[in-house]
Image 1 (cartoon, rainbow, N blue to C red):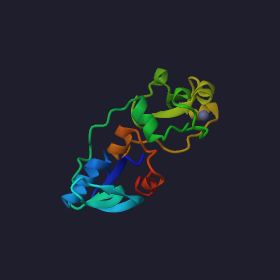
Image 2 (spheres, rainbow, N blue to C red; image 1 turned 90 degrees about the vertical axis):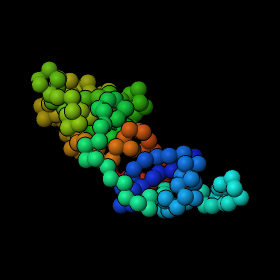
Image 3 (cartoon, protein in one colour; image 1 turned 180 degrees about the vertical axis):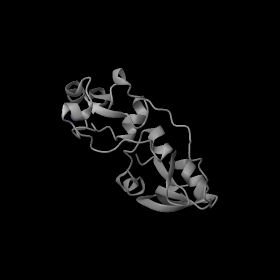
Amino acid sequence: MLGEVLVLNASFEPLNIVPVRRAVVLLLKEKAEVVEAAQRRIHSGNGLALDWPLVIRLVYFVKIPAQFPLPLNRRTVMARDQYTCQYCGIQPSKAGLTLDHIVPRARGGKSDWKNVVSACIPCNQRKGGHTPQEAGMSLLSRPDRPRYAAVVLLGRVQGPTVWRKYIPH
Ligand SMILES: [Zn+2]
């Protein structure tokens, strides 16, 4: 994962994940500054060596529309939930994780960010066609539309440990 760099907005909100070469270009053009670096050097190709960036921050604020397009699908929901069953908290393999409609579709539950969560197969089966309340189950958190598109779209919350400080959950 050393090959990728977390890009923060000037406000320190996570914006994107880019290849290290792209980050170096932003740094050399002084469009960004290093926030976190690894204990090694990277050579820029024109004789310059700099600390290997892990997290950089844009010098200028980039305005993001409040309602950026964010498709709801298996990958984005699971990335939002960090591949964790929202009922029991386990992190099975991706194949062992399903999407659950909190209010079942058959009972009018919508396919939206507030009604779809990741669930392991045993929890999904136990819940069946019931609401969590009926099944005596509770959610670990209240699901909602993610605030940070980049992280969810890329589905890579699992970057270097140092990223986690900058990616609120
Ligand atoms: Zn579970």
